[in-house]
Amino acid sequence: MASPPGSPAREVVLIANLGDRDLARDGERVTPPREEGQRILGDYAAQRVRLSLPLLAPVLKYLAWSRGRIDRIILYATDQPETVAPHHRSSDTLHFAEIAKRLLEDQGHQGKVTLRFLRNRNPSLYDETYQFYQGELGRKGVFDKAESVYVMATGGTPAMSLGLLVAAVERLGNRCVPLYLQDGASEPRRLGLVEQLRRSTLRQVAISHLTHYQFAAVKAVLREGGFGDADCRLAAYAAARLNFDWRGAWRLADEGLAQAPGQLGQLWEELRSQARVLEEQADSPLFLGERYHRAWVAYETGAYSEFLILLVGLEEAVLRALVREHLGIDFRGDDSARRERERQLAKKAGLRQYLEALDPGRSLKDYVQSNRYSMLAVLEYVVGPGREDPEIPTSHEERTKIAEALAIEKRLADRLGPLRNRAVHEAGGASCEMIKDKYSLQGQAQVDLLGDLEKLTRLAGGVVDGWGIERVRQALQRTLGE
Image 1 (cartoon, one colour):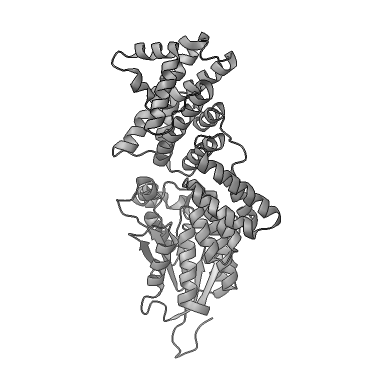
Image 2: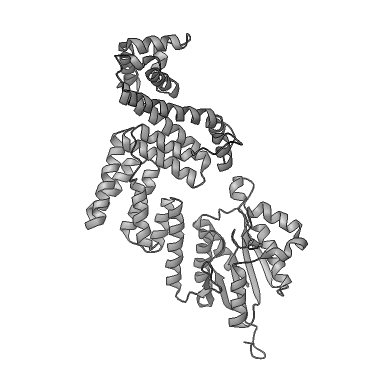
């Protein structure tokens, strides 16, 4: 609708974040955004006919139909500094923004498109994105002529969507018209109630964080969205356990048990019991399972350097458990524990002689150190020269189990050891491709790394099924209606 003669111009404005789904080529997502986007820009004239804006196009069509015009389009993209990890920078959408601007101008929006960039900010952190958009939308004069500001809450990271929406509602008030485009929808849906939108967005953000086991972030989002204390406490419990803070997890479960009746109370009772076992029984079957699951989470969520570090803890815990189960020797503990190990090793004549002959440069005292080398030497004796040792009675089935565990452990050490040392002790990093190539031996058939870790954990008696944190995640998913 045109403004009456003599009245100040009233603008229809669209604000949108650009994410990794906002540009398509031949109907397929373009990835990685930074590198591939730059290549497309360099060959834009040839590529143009193959490109589309799958999220922006339905919104623009909707506005053209419902309002008859679009006066300004403001697009937000990410451009993180070089100090950020390469795999994070690869997701930056600055080149997508330039491509989108060209496509929109080619479609008749010349002079209407403005690009803005999140720089020196972490686009995954709500606190930082919220502050950024507060500053952006509060810039003097930017929206003085705006009658309606449509905010597209679909592209970008969950933190960007939430930061933009909350800041837009606060800065623009009733002029803010949030839009949401569901996957596969031909046009967006207006979200009329700001509070409903806010809770819906927070719910989606929480679900996204749950998918990546980011329970500290889940707790913050639940608190922001006004969800109950019980749900926030569940998220806090899971965050504590993922950080191996067993005592903190126990306290949270104890508080939850005091306030939660019925089925939730039963869950809290189990979670409290598990936290106590994890705190008091190092290398217990539950602890081994916890180590495995923690490494699994790191791998599945892309924290590959962290995965390699956690792998060390899992391998050593497995070796300690196997030695303790089959030889009764405890490789945990301080100086007094070392003296006890030395006494136990000295009593087993066959094992002692084997260790003393294994390396002329080492004495028995060297093999009481709680390290991978010592435990491997002891276990290799059990499945090798010591298989008939009456002082270490083991069945064929037990020796087979130990041998299978040692084979996996050797594969892990030989193939991932150098990569792990580089990631931990040097300046090297890690990626999914690097780990897969090393573990499967480049060019050969893929070896199931996570399957090997699960098998290794089970061979040592670890409890893999019924992980407490997964049960928490499922409870929170039910709360969020996923």
